[in-house]
Image (tube, rainbow, N blue to C red; front, side):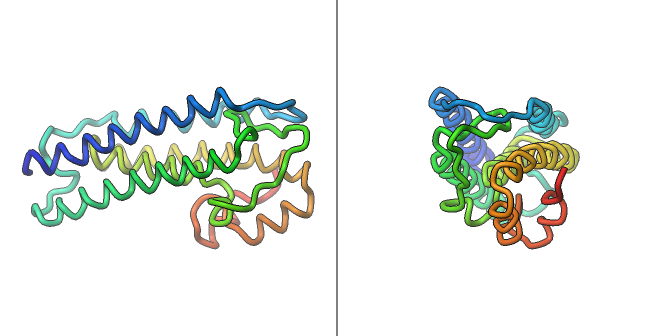
Length: 204
């Protein structure tokens, strides 16, 4: 595998991860408001999601070797898609966090005067931050890891995400009632495909 073809997406993905962390650190400082309801169990889901990112790099790949044994033209296509994926995921997460504003929090919670957000990325999926994070997970695995790590990490990440989504949506259904039920019927939860609703939209 050409050295530049390995290093270019690798460096861009690394920069993307640093920017990804900076977004959350910045928004954590801005996250304010009087909590009305919260679910501490949602923190467990965050640790499961974080574990998925660790698993993605658990089986290292030999430097300057491709993610899959394909010709260099296909490697170039994969590298290009990797860069597009990390940039798109980063923009999607940043837009979602910006749209939430002070309502964003690591812990699942409902604030006083909480608003039901349905614009921006939330028109596409109900939980765009987790969608973007999954894109970052895949991009990172393509850059650093082994296909087996990506497979296991994807399963673990989806488990943590479903737990987190159910925790959040339990609070949102209690807060907004039929308005949230209508939103859940119209917009998928995690992946912009209709089948996603059935997995994570049921009441906890």
